[in-house]
Image (tube, rainbow over all chains, first blue to last red; front, side, top):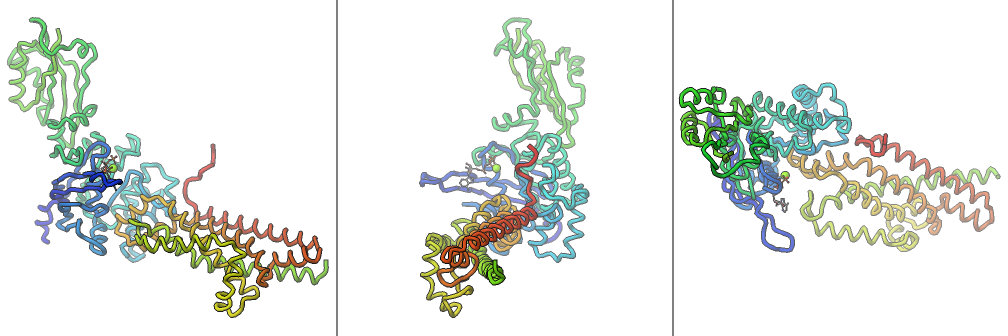
Length: 355
Length: 224
Ligand SMILES: Nc1ncnc2c1ncn2[C@@H]1O[C@H](COP(=O)(O)OP(=O)(O)OP(=O)(O)O)[C@@H](O)[C@H]1O
Ligand SMILES: [Mg+2]
């Protein structure tokens, strides 16, 4: 395979994958995955988000053959994982690293011993294992812990060992099953930053699953939302965050991008304007460069529409600023304001009326 | 106490150590792999061989349910075929080993089963063969439990070895019965018991010490 082909080909491709589990007592099958098609572009970090039982782990485990599709195909770098067995399957597994929520480190081995394990399994000569392990230890910043046992490490340090171990055989793909779910927010951020660095420096494709939108926001280039074994929404993170289509996506975004309506407004809100002085309450989602442009003051100057900012937040998704504002304005001017803002690529939503 | 008696006590202690030592060693060589197999061969497990698993499990259960003294006399023909005689210390090693192997197998099986299944999953994800998983993950992780199990087995063997006087097995237990009980020498009986207590204590302490050396997990009951 040539370099160019290699780059164009998705790192992982799910093609109409279904996974059914037979139920105890023979009461039909549970469809853990229902006709899933998804491509994970090489070199990206792709997030799979969904509620408990949505099928996230099942989907991830298909990639290294820990789980097999009932129907459909799973290709990793063009190789069919679903039908691989024996030595061929083990060979694929060595090209796919995996990290786990509960780390799954051997308690009987030191940090160095754990990191060297995949190399021992792959039959790497001892003389080559030691320097490789040292490199990995440096990469994840655990030089001082080299000869410690997992029981002597913090959660974040354990996950660093897990990451180093997953990278030992120089895989092209890294799978992460809720790798930060057992960690506190600070440590989560550090581990995610490490994954981001590895993705950039090694060009590694990362497929991670999570139930936290914040994780997606912080590291994922692409995201797929899974619900009841189906992908209900997918695309570049930025697009999904700014224009969530599916109710599940919206509910995951609550608290991450949402700005709360102040209590005094929320309690007085009506579905229709009650008088000539009624104010419309509108949510504006800022996207792209215009997030930093003072659109509201321009609207005041150009259209003479005065707005009142009730709540707001701006954050970053990847390189893009992304924000949300809640404003009030005279209800008669609502449609005009929405038209003006839409011209600049902003998304507006009418929330209700006060007064 | 006569010099003769001291000599007899010494020889009997060595006989006990010999019987227990060889039976424990051979019992481990048979019971260890058997225990590993039992722990990993149910349906859907690493070595998935449910039928063989069931048959071996049944054999182990039968061997474990035969009372030791009945085992000793009932396998006399087998013992004679194996070591050429059915009488004596070496002959006594055969029933001791046959009693120890299934016991050790169950103890090893239990320890292996306690290894976190997440570790097996991680090893599979690394592309490990079932044999590599056993050798590099299951056995090292189960080592503290296995060592404590073997300690228990050796202590039991010391007790069992006292019963093999029935087939001329000699050793401390036999000495205690023959002199202490049948010839009314309570001091001999007492010394035999003391030596056995010391042996058991020593084995137990040694086993715990070795197990602790293998155990790198977080201390469980410390510092509360
Ligand atoms: N080995 C199995 N046998 C039977 N059913 C299974 C098996 N593994 C998963 N399932 C079922 O498949 C569905 C999806 O499970 P999965 O573990 O993929 O969910 P998940 O999204 O990872 O959930 P969580 O966030 O709780 O980890 C669930 O209904 C689960 O009960
Ligand atoms: Mg899961």
